[in-house]
Length: 112
Length: 115
Image (cartoon, rainbow over all chains, first blue to last red; front, top):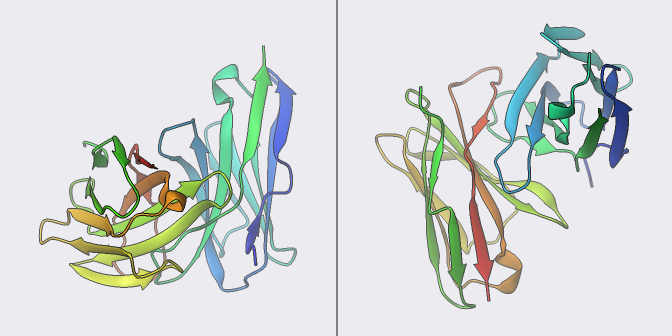
């Protein structure tokens, strides 16, 4: 039972354009959502998070949107840069747990 | 602040052996979580420790265990290694204590190969 799903294994965009990565979840107890960026053989790097009491959070080029009714979140990267090429994971957790449930990841390629 | 550190970075063991991995969290962080990453199963939660107590546990067999010391450093142990235990083991630390949630910051991982 996969509680967090990233249905697109890969995404390719042109440098300077917007990258939109999507994530769906099934567990209504999740109230905190995060996005991580990962390079091979390295640990995930925290990018941005959002609490379920919000529907949008921005940090520089990164914006996360949360649609609770649809149980859907997305990460927007504007403008995309070649250095953004990596695997992106969304993760979710419920209050009072140190347990993150991860999606399977989306490989983003930003072409110069 | 220094990030999360994990030792060793690479490890080769044979089936039946046991292994101990170490993690030092970011200074001031008291919550430490462990994850296993494999190509087939992705990133999966093993367990979380806070103030030397295991607070949460994932769906892994009892061969996987851990502990946390008074300085928040943590170790995980895998006994009777199996080929399927070959994976990247990641440690993450967080500053959250109770109520709500907080971001977890990951170390570089320990790559374990079981032959």
